[in-house]
Length: 239
Image (cartoon, rainbow, N blue to C red; front, top):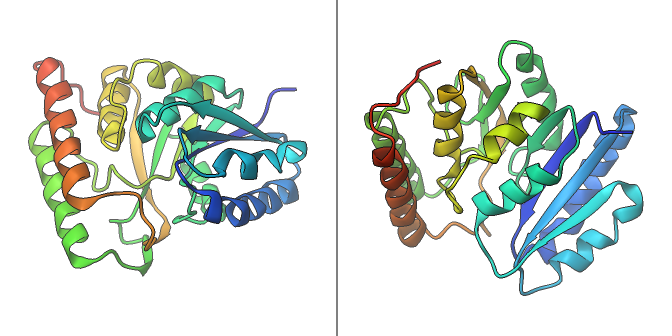
């Protein structure tokens, strides 16, 4: 039986946080009583991330391994390609957005096959803010993204996203960005393929142990967005 919901969870050196996160995700999904699968993508971890995930295989967890580390975008591509679900949820290993918020996104899936969790809407609730420098860098990045033609989206970078399963597998097969800027490419490719993309507010808290390095990753994200965007000049489509 194929899954009703596939949860794709990329993980890099997450041995400390992954166990509690999977316990919460599985308790919630088991309580819903519908077929599901959880795909943990170990992105070349140097710790026991894969071993922690494998403790849950009898509860619907599968482990996809990448080596060496390739980045969040590459990890999600591998996980989505393996998924079988009618719907696919992308979810960060630290559960910065609680798994229960999938219900907010499900309510929007009937009107759009790509639903982005957002930290920037009136309905959003931030329970622990990012440090000021990261907030400012995020705002600058979003402004640049809009200037480059990916308009109408307030927050591309929240890791909590729900997609129609077939749409997800088709879109991720086209993505090329391996690291954190994959979100921008996902929105742009989805619109090019004629899919509507919507945002809905979610609960979110900053994780002190975030894997994002402000200077290194911000410059890499900007370069990735510029590279793919200028490779496709003149091909905009807005939804």
